[in-house]
Length: 198
Image (cartoon, rainbow, N blue to C red; front, side, top):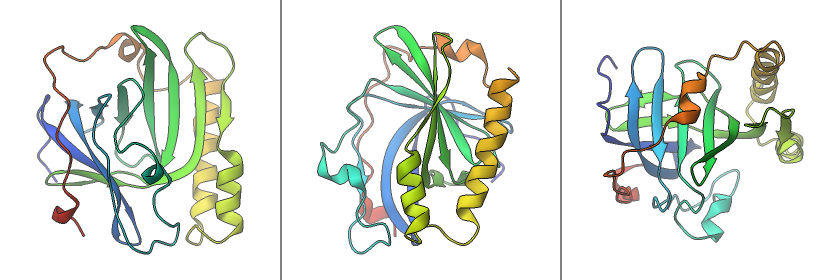
């Protein structure tokens, strides 16, 4: 795909599992180019879940309110990376970076596809040490055969690279993003109908 999305344009972030939509929600483009796609997930954004049989079962969030409950999140992802960097705030105060390990994004005409791979790292904005998240869930998914051959090893390799960047203070995500805030006139996008996807 050669065309980039316009800033302010609403696109879809879709998680595909078993070749079908597991979860999809709209995000608004902040910046897009050959090296970075930055999108904003607004508080209250509707979440749409796939139904039927999935090897991981239904998405675990399906049992909660079908909208993003936390404050808005900025998601930064680069082509080819097996993770995205999510930025969180509490009110106007930046709280930290969340490294979300996921399949590399695959662009399409209305957004991009990926799949969360359980493992995460939290980097507090106050400079305190990073910490791992969801390690037990990741290991359980591996133990029960939930990953494709080589997938868990690939996630671990990606995680080692991220940790090396953190520990050598050579991360690519710019501090400027911690001071970003969405324009006040950006409304919460409408739900993405599941019927438009497989």
